[in-house]
Image (tube, rainbow, N blue to C red; front, top):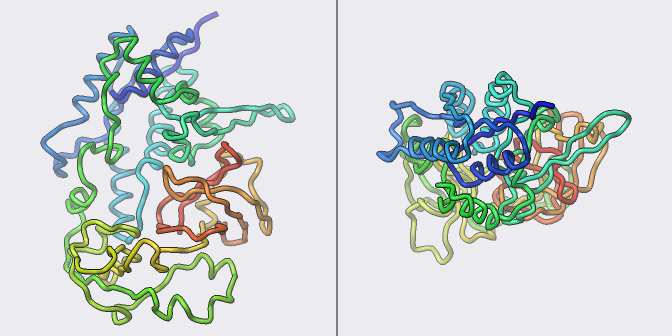
Length: 393
């Protein structure tokens, strides 16, 4: 019987290197592909060119493991589906998550199609998550499960995957701790064994986001307004209003509601919950961004991380943005589900209830959450299984 063929996305990091090694050990025919996602010279990134180093490391790992290797240039699709989308979202004052999108649009779509065209049975990535499956009525249902290393669990980044994509995917390091992965890489003398985990955006390496955004979104001067924690907006009679819409609504501010405390160079460079980069000192507690208004170009701030403007109990996902990994568990209109959810990577899971309404899905948390950002993803779980996700509107 011929071996099953797996294409591994070799990124030049330790996780994907060990992924390729383990699959080879398990008897698969392994092919390594490096994805080149970026080469737009009109947007200067930095003098360092991380992708060259990374593709070189990926090639050395493939040589060491004696597997075929090639580079695929996906920068055009990347620019269209990720970069343009990011500029567009930031321009609207939202905060997109490029890593989640990169997985949905590039690694498990464009890349997967290339892999399958090479006759692959599966694609494999170095993500810290696991795949489960069970049979019901003759149908196989796939599960996306958290990685065993609770510090590194990356299921959140894969929250937009579908049954079709999961069916064709393997996550060989999901059962391991990061320390074990490094240990294996060291034993096998893989060049990536001691390499630091990549930081920054999933495609542009070592650049800071504001520097990147300034390439396309023009600076424009505006004011920074501080809203008092005692402002009537937080204490009006709406305490009694427990409707889903009210709980998930964001506060709307006007510039004359607070006091002018400084200036900035563009509201679209700032995100909710941000503390650094405001350049305003002299307040008893540090200022946090509580809201940005890109139309009026105003940044609203409040003192301290418990400022009421940062906290909210609920959020809303428009119906066309609701995604179930477990299609079989999709809620009918009018139904609700007690679950645990997170609104950002590495956040601990928080108790919440989903309410499926005609117009979309409300996620209402037991405890108020900090800095719920439009454009980010909310993902909901049952124990260690990720059931679904959606873009916060």
